[in-house]
Picture 1 (tube, helix red, strand yellow):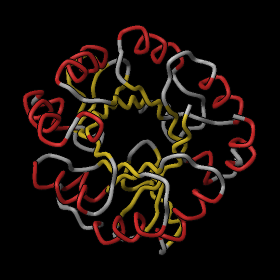
Picture 2 (tube, helix red, strand yellow):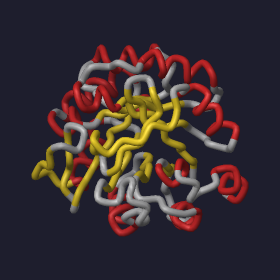
Picture 3 (cartoon, rainbow, N blue to C red):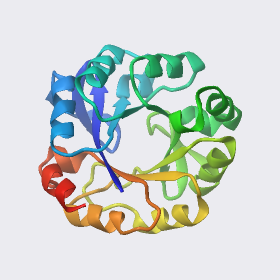
Picture 4 (tube, one colour):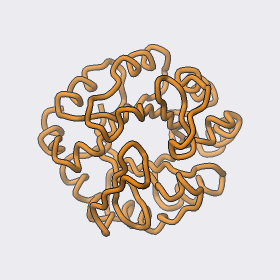
Length: 238
């Protein structure tokens, strides 16, 4: 299982939000590239980035930071947040990311996912599914739809997305542990790569995820920033 340390970008800074709320923001660094290098040096396999400005507004204000990060490190990167057009995806790939994460737009139009997977290749397209109580949440977690997360995951796979990222937003940033039950259900439904996100509170959580047959990766955010998980130590165990 791959370790995906997370970097959330807002106004060129590395930040963390509590349960996706812009008014619950902690700023960690004004130098995203140096922060990314730290996660690479400590044993991260793949960097997960989110452009929070784009997630909330659709406007990509952090591409310079993304470009600086992809130039500073050698591990691959994926970028989510505001991937709602072909132009946004092309710009992200041009900035050096290996994969983009389509969120809100996937919930609105699976045809868009299909077109992007056909154009850029399945390995470069992930669908990010943010869910609360099994229902898909969209637009930077500001709206909950009636769509079942498991149904959207299956549709994404059929549309050609090579990866699904499942985030349980009730646990994200809360350090309460991932939603293992829902992840097991997703693994039983999918053949494509599945990445777990949200709720990691300890090395034990990550080790339990690593023991789930077929799980491709795990995104670790707040637990790294708060020191609850030591990435270097964890990477040496897995």
